[in-house]
Amino acid sequence: MAWALNCLYLIAWTAASPWLLWRRLRWGKNRRGWVQKWCGLGTVPAAQAPRVWLHAVSVGEVNLLAPIMAELTRRGEFEFAISTTTETGFELARQKYPQHLVFFCPFDFSWAIRRTLENLQPKLIVLAELELWPNWTRLAKQARVPLVVVNGRLSAKSFAGYRRWRPIVSGIFGRLDLVLAQSVEYAERFIALGTPADRVKVTGNVKFDNVDPERGRAQAVGFATQLQLLPGQPLLVGGSTQPEEELMLLAAFGKLRVEFPDLKLVLVPRHPEKVSILEAALRASPWSYRFRSGRTHRGGDASVDVMVVDVIGELAAWWTLASVAYVGGSLGSRGGQNMIEPAACGSVVCFGPNTQNFKDVVELLSGSDAATVISCEADLVSLTSRALCEPEWARERGTRAAQLVASHRGAASTTAECLRQLLLEPEGVSNPSSRQRAA
Image (cartoon, rainbow, N blue to C red; front, side, top):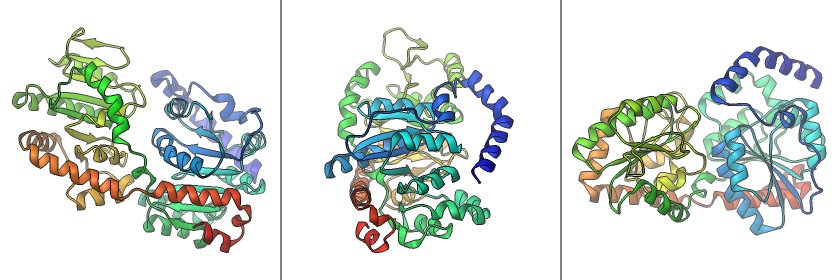
């Protein structure tokens, strides 16, 4: 089985190599970590406490780990090793968790996974949301290392795709020792794909615990100074945006400035390396602008109209300054980005109609009249204009959003307790009654 999978992977990599090379040359992607990805993690110091291997695909999952790690640390002494798939995730993990081992996750070649398990010697493997591979799950099972999915999520699209291959993927899902799902709907999907029902528990969405507006506001003081943003001055923030959304926000900003000449715009692209289109649009615009990385600007040291945050790890702080917050990835086909952070900050929150990645959160916010779905530039102009003309309405909407986020916290604590019991009671992996106690 392993050799067949390895051969299939090698064929796939060979076929994809021109595309990967183009991405490297065009966007600077896939430049680092090749030894760890192909060969596995090298020798690391022996663990001084039970070691937990936490895997986060990219930026969102890296942030998700913070409250879980904090709650686990409150419950005992553990070591953490964090793997990521993307380079942006790797950089953020190194920034957020400098005291822990951070490495690139190996590809699902049997030799790379086996070497990583042998050198890391984890007592538990934690997968943020979902990242399942056949060799990884099989070798973890052989090594008797419990494999857990936390904040488990299976979108309708992903579920449909997996279900078409259920005879193949059921073995992979069946190897999971525990799934801590965000909702009953997601839990049922894991069970339908082969995870035994007694290994699945609904614990809620950890992302509600992963917001701290006060921490963000401390950092935002310096940002406001850089932007020369005065107290009470209106600010439109577009976060985790795609290029087409950035152009939409820039066009809406131009119309809004006619009515609100002191309005400023902050754009935080989801992929900072893909800002060439936005940069060209800014050069053709009448606005003064600055890129946080320092790559380009117009306007000298004076106050700028538009700030482009083309660096990683600052979005949470910028949300705290927003009068109106647009959450990106929601007008195209990406399925939306995390709208919990701006909601927790009490901003007037809006996003596009394609938010299947955050279906439950959107239903909560929309059901409480705490967020608005927009479909075009005109909708954004209308919403922002109302928020700035009716400050009491904007304040009430922001308060509802912040209160809703606060009321749904607690998933990180429940998740950490389930993980702690697996770490301290290894017999719980094969003993359903013990697993029920962990739940």
